[in-house]
Amino acid sequence: MSDPIKVLQEPHTRSWQQALSLGIIGLVFGLIIAFAVIFWHSRQVVPLADVFLSARTPLLQHRSEKGAWPQDFDLSSPPEALLAYAYGPVRSAVLKAGVSGRWRFESGASGAAVAFIPSEWSEEARRVLVSVDGKLDDGDPASGQFRVGADRATFTLKTD
Image: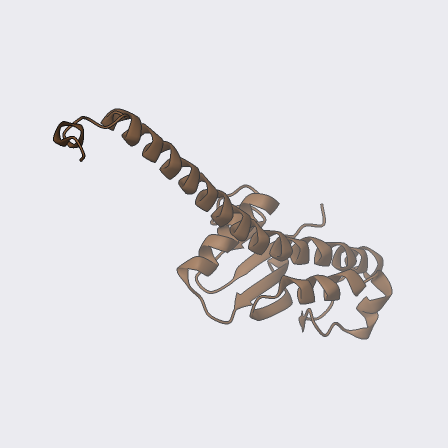
């Protein structure tokens, strides 16, 4: 027969030890989730930044040799004159970016810029583009070379 007194004895581990071990397990799970979110977010930012950076070189080369910016165009279908300036990396960067939206080169009286217009503007799209601003520029979406507007992000090309 079992002794009824053993059933009423206190457990071998104290409640504070159990709370501490559960807290450590929760902390580890929280850190794993945080790192996963950061990794996923950075996988979205880097390809977008690569498109802006890779488009800058051939466009600035065209400007310095021809003395003028090319006409506005979609980055996926550049004008023939721009193909002589090693435009291949720009096409591959646009394909690798894997985001839905339009990539454009736009020039005007105020200067020239590479623009990204997302197909669907959301708070997540804005958050990613603000992170791209942190990678390319000053991190402030309202100032600097990279700006995030109401419906697009633009990377201003400077000739200085």
